[in-house]
Length: 254
Image 1 (cartoon, one colour):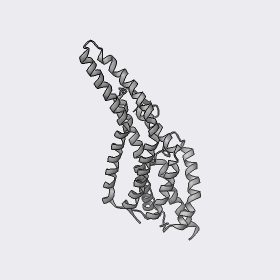
Image 2: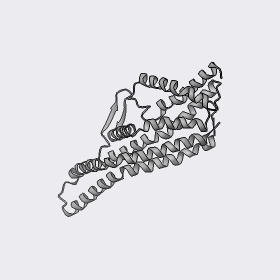
Image 3: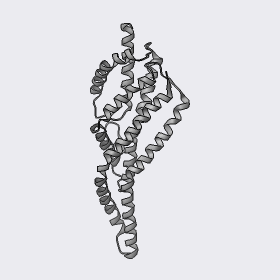
Image 4: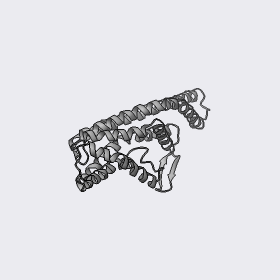
């Protein structure tokens, strides 16, 4: 193997690894400065690239097609993993709706886009849990294992396998409702209780009591249920990580 082929292979490795910093959760966070991402990607490419090129059945002809293939692999891999953040976002939307925080949004000064307060909080908590449980290392390890199924520079997308993403998205929606289920049940119980009280005492200011009671109960349930978040998020992320590797293996041929 010539030096030129090795360098071409290392560049292709860097392109696939770079997909983590664009599409995958944690790595793609705007909190990490672009320069820091570039330094991390460069270090990872130098450390892992030569070994991948030497031990894989690689196609080392760098060009537009091979670059597009590597981007497609990292896109599918990162897209499946990003479902965990969509899970947190959807659960936050449900929690904000049940706790009467639908009008309380955060304004991103860089993009002028409003985001739900609870969605931002749930995503921040999810990111913290992923980093604390070592999910970032799991993502790197999972992406490296894709080289066994899809050789470097030789990926060919099978479009008939794209519908595999649909049941994964459905599972994420179900998981979001499961994550928010205790809070939803508690706030609904508060609404039903206040409705019964209003029937017993028509003079009761229902509108003045419902929102504070739901908010207070929501915070109590949220604090109590946070102890189970780590295991819940870790299990769902492990499932998505396995799905990401299976999806790459089924959607691409070498």
